[in-house]
Image (cartoon, rainbow, N blue to C red; front, side):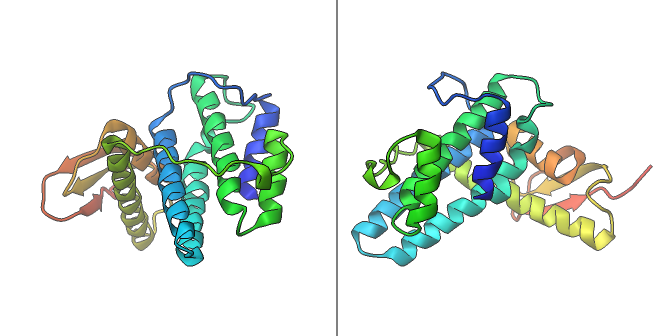
Length: 218
């Protein structure tokens, strides 16, 4: 419901229309849509096997990804102070797809809230009269992006832990973070920089993942 309110608030302010448009999604959009399709497949397969436990936990995991990471990292992409752009439209379009399809897979578990959200967003009679969504097949790059985003969030978690230990709040900018054991592309590195409020990311070769924040202030 919080994600729904977030979308509706900014969609109304920006006069968003869910008409299909050919707008290139950001890396963040691509990731959450891949997670959506991954979840549809898992929920469908689990319900076909009469396994609501696995299904409901998959839905909960997706909701956590949407609310605790996608919306968190997308707040600066929408709103009246953000100039109209393809990125803003891509974000709103992604949220619309997430909420409508999420309502469909949630419907067997939470029939009333899912119906309210779906009907208001689509104008259709009921979520319970809609067709069950079909998952798009994930490409190798989609699967890799899902795994890479897990690493991004792990790096952020370790970086925040180091900030907390050092008593340096996130609002204090830092020079850089050194990540040993892997290397990610610039879009993913930017998410790390934004979340940790650091200027740069340095990648080093190594066998195990570790991070080190430059805590020197000048």
